[in-house]
Image 1 (cartoon, rainbow, N blue to C red):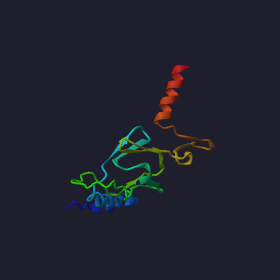
Image 2: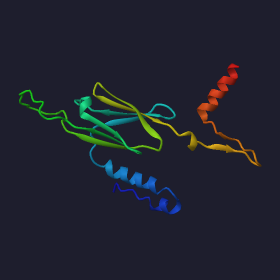
Image 3: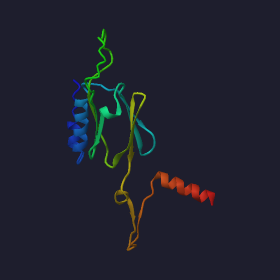
Amino acid sequence: MSRLDFTPYRRSTVGFDRLFDLLEQQARQNSGDNYPPFNIAKRGEDEYRITLAVAGFRPQDIDITAHQNLLVVQGKKHEGEDDGSEFIHVGIANRGFERRFELADYVRVRSADLADGLLTIDLVREVPEAMKPKKIAVNGGATLTAVPDARERAADRKDADAA
């Protein structure tokens, strides 16, 4: 019963098919394996961080690939690191993994770091200047100016207060 039915919403919306497809796809993917565990944090208005617990993996064991709207993190354990010991109990996961994260438009990977068994991937959203909203003058005014976002308005207010 974990299937989501977006039929009522699909009937009353236009152009949101991709969104509903992504939600249904995520519900299917998340019903299975939860390895490795991860956190997603919003660090600012346009900055995010994904943290994966990848204890036992070295930087050369991890492959991060960023496609247009998809981030794929793969870990492959290398066999042959046997020191001749016979294990009585194996509780540390020694398996490969693949995690996929759907990214919004204009989100790119800024950096990735592995320290203390945690892989951190910093993401930033950078909207191109051409895609930002613009003011259009009415009655023949030919100048177009970009509409400042909240951060730019706050900076302008600070500059005006300082002057």
